[in-house]
Structure formats: C-alpha cells, structure tokens
Length: 419
Image (cartoon, rainbow, N blue to C red; front, side):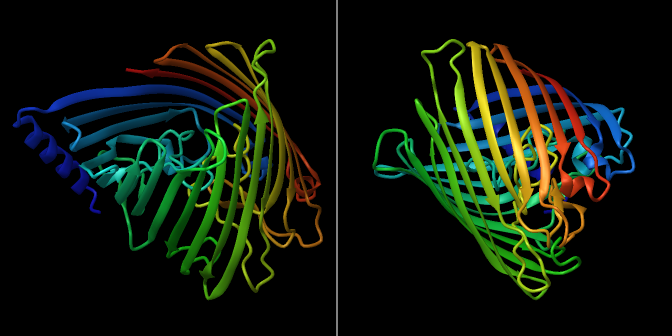
C-alpha cells in the first residue's frame, strides 16, 4: 500500500460520514511516558553496553459508527525518544502517522454475525506468542490487512485474514507495508471446550512469506505454522498451554520446527494478598547443521515474552519459569518470577528480539543461558491511569560467558493516561 493511501482513505471516509445523519462519533486515546535503562545491553555484545532513554507516545482513536452495521476508524500515533545513545530502531520514533485506518462492516445472520474489516489494523491473537502488537515498543505494530470474522455468541469465533506488516518511517504519514516483501495469511478459530466452564481452545494456521529471511539472507522463505492453544483465565485453576508445529522451506532448505508451552496456576483468593502461584515452561526448537532448518520462527511475538527485560527471543531454547502474583489491594498487582534458560541446540544461534542473532553457533559450547530474576508492580489508582515499575536481572550462564558475554540489568518505569 502506498504511503499516502491510508491517510487519503481516512479523510474521505470521515468527511463522508459527517455528511450523514444517524451517525455516532467518538474520540479516545492514551499517552504513555516510559523510562528504560540497560546495563550490559544485549549481554554486552553491543558496542554500547550501558544505555537509558525516555520515550513518549500519544495515540488518538476516532470512530464513526452507523448503528452496529458500519464503522469507520482512524487511529493516529506519534512518538519521540530522548537520551538513547544506541542507534534508533524504526519503532523508536515517528512523526504523526496512522496506526490504524479501516472500514468495518457487520452483517447479522440467524444466530451469528459476519464481520469484514479492510485497511490498516492491529492484530493480536492468543497470548501473543506469535501475533502481538509490539506494545512495549514506542510505536506499536500494525498491518495492512483484509480480515473476515464469523462469530457465534460471545465465545465462538473464526477469523481469516491476509496481511502485511507496516514499516515505521520517521516522517509524517509515510509508514507503509510491502506485501511483495513480507506477507502473512491465517485462519484462526476460538471455541469453548465441552468440559467445564470457561475452558477454551484456539486452533489456527498461519502462513508467512518472507523475501529476505534471517534463515536464508537475501533469499526466500515460506513457513507454515499449525497450532493449538488450550486456556482458562477464570479461577481458581488457570492454564494456558500451546502446541505449535512449523514446516516449509528457506533458501531451498526444508524447515521442520516446533514449540510447546505449558502454563498452569492456582488462585488462592482466601489468603492475604490473594497469591497466584504459577509455573510456565517452554520447549522451543532450534538447530541448523546445514540440512533441515529446525529454528523456530516466533513471527510477530510480544518482545517481553519471558520477562520485562525481553533479552531473548523465543527460538532455540528451553525455559522454566516459576512465578508468583500478589494483590495487596484491588488497584495493585505485584509479580515475582525467575527464568531458567538453556539452548535447545548448540548448532544454532542465540536470538534476541525481534529474532536477531546475538551470537553465532558454538557446537561444542555450553547450553546454559542463565537465570533471569524479574519483579514488577502495577498500580491503577483509576481506570484511566496506570503506573508501572519493573526490574529484571539476567545472570549470564556459561553459554553466554564463554563467548565474552555478560549479565544484564534492566529497569522500566512508565506512566499511562487514557482519555
């Protein structure tokens, strides 16, 4: 999609809507200021080992609704960063631009509804293991997409879409996608399970075509992902388990990869501070000996997949993560956790987000990546106001120390206001 097309579409849609009667208009938004500090950035492999910065973001969403059958929406975004010594990444800054701009139609059927959404939009599915909106970055991720959604009741839904991620450019209204370079398509279903209340399953397929694959630099990759997620978010027992298989080819080589994630917890609401002990574990494939590629591709995962520091990308590793949630009062949530992490294969790289190589393979090297200690507190004094403070220390294991890497400390403090 050309850089000016989304803006022109949005302006014409809004102008046309304002000329009609029986329309409802709304405007809302949020502003966020976040401070981040790294000591030992990228495990000390980066030339700048200590860095900190403040980034600010403002998002404003405008909608025009004609009953429940038609919606025009445009969400504007702006972001700036101060103090960063490392080179700025594309999501760090952006002059005013469109995060979302779409038209949505809704058609009631006998006992269900059919919905179509066309234009720029954010995509978030499941628990963000594969498709997330890059919330931690200064500029969120959106896609130029065509999405069709069938829904029955509140709990059954099937989505089908074809999309291309939007690249953030620094000037005003110049963000664009390139479907010829990077394209994904998916069918994603959510359904209640027959055993017990509040138990659900996600069943999905995601296709990816990348003309500049990290696994075949300068070459083509086509990867197919099949997955199933079983989850429950209403207590006292909580669970979130996901099984994923990937296959395809990259640079003329076969792909065969996969991941399994386990999450289980228990709400102890009768005890002081209502503790919620949980255990999470991940087995995420890796391995590249020159034949079949076993490296798992996390697609567009949440960067804080393991902890707030987000030091490692979910590829080629084992992760064991006991954690404890505490609720001293209704407005405050405390999280304490530890990650024990190992390489799945020493014949593959150490990966950092968003799927970049931090270190090349050492077939005779150690596997232990280290131990990450994580603590955070979130305070919501009002529904429209949030304060957050987080700290992560990753004590480097032998796999990192043997290649002259170091431990990492990360601090985050943020303030978010919705309006």
